Image (cartoon, rainbow over all chains, first blue to last red; front, side, top):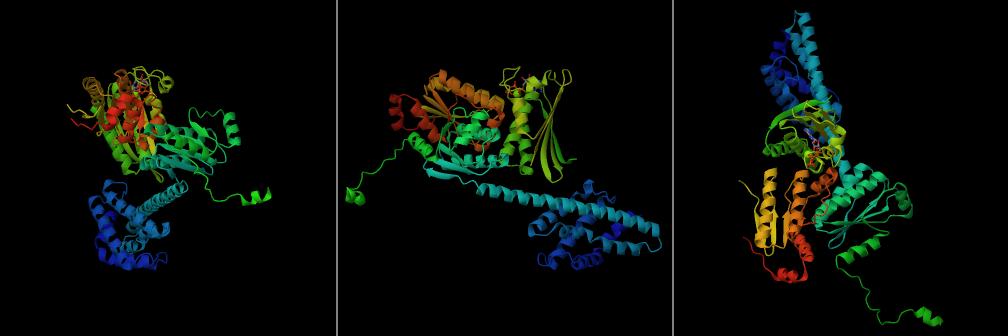
Length: 296
Length: 135
Length: 133
Ligand SMILES: Nc1ncnc2c1ncn2[C@@H]1O[C@H](COP(=O)(O)OP(=O)(O)OP(=O)(O)O)[C@@H](O)[C@H]1O
Ligand SMILES: [Mg+2]
């Protein structure tokens, strides 16, 4: 039977390994700048070991069976580490696909007078390795997606600087279009900074926001509500005339949220609430307004 | 189609089990690295539904599933009871509606807290709710 | 049976909720608090939920109840330290905890309570030392 023979081949790892590693190196796809031959040999050896163990437990080659889970795990780990090192999907998948050639050669040697047996074995091995290869690519994509999402989140965070204006007062100057995803990250950041700085007042300035639709307004209101649950008050500032008009038009009600036309106004209110007073120092007695006196 | 990576079954027959459900949902959410806010959302939704299952459904079964669909992973939780069922689903989902002196926020709120919400119920047929939160 | 401890700090009571609270524990706490407000004549209650990982409608209702009961008994109350993720979730759930006072941490919560309480009492607490039972 073909199955037992595949297992046989895998068990005589040494010759297979040499062929396989050579095949990977010669494939022209592998990046020798990203991985050393030693490492490649180590990974290949480990994979054959895991594969052989799986085949001992369950020779069916049905890769979804529990016995093959360690094999899939191994490939997932490989995908992830190669993805991080900067390998492309094909550079990653070649690991599995390049095992075909040496396996076929070995199988051929075992089926010298049995063409049908050979055909069957080759077919089974092909199907099995193709599935493993596809699984490798899938995991590779998941890994990449994670990296990209992480980068996106980092960028979003960078684009939302929450600044501390005074002890107990933070401000979030929002700039640019607010989509749902960005707004929720921005708002989360604000709430975190409120906790970190123990600020009881947060000013959300929307001067730089081109439009406020119902959704954005909803987000703003939810943030104000969440901040209140945490024990902080929000002031929304920088509502430009056009935005005020659209908001009335869309019947967006900011309810009992404090709003101010400018950030300066908002800051004044915030200071006032915190019991702070801003005063102008007495005018210094040194001569001023020389120009005007000369004219009079 | 989503592939099932893992599943776990819990029985809910007393109040303490609501905490067990919350903890199990947290474990799975952490496993697929949901953000803290998303974790909190699905745990809260599960807490509401587990309590409804116990109080109105007279207890039942909760099944947690860890899923992969394409490149995304998710946590899915099924709540099944063989209690009296819900006669008017639309009404039950409405914020503020309660038949038991609650605040009537559980069902509607749970729906808002997850990506997918599926409710099947009829008088005498029990109540089956499935929620999913994707990463 | 397990209980959530209630500490006395001068004229205030402090409850720190540290466990994943099951429903019965919440109900017991409600009872214990009302009894303690009456027996100690406390002027205010601080409920520290900074370690709480979720607040669902049940716990939300408990927080609302405590604040109403404290008010009936002539005491102030404030919920302190709610985590951002919890607050965001609670808003989405639809719970606004109207009538419940909130503060960022215990210290700010005390300040809030002092402001709520009449001027006489204010003097008492500013120099009063914290007594732990
Ligand atoms: N599993 C269930 N079986 C039967 N009826 C249910 C079930 N779950 C919910 N209901 C019905 O739907 C109503 C609304 O449920 P919901 O969770 O929104 O509010 P509540 O439980 O009454 O109050 P809250 O959850 O805010 O404390 C319930 O009062 C009950 O009549
Ligand atoms: Mg409910």
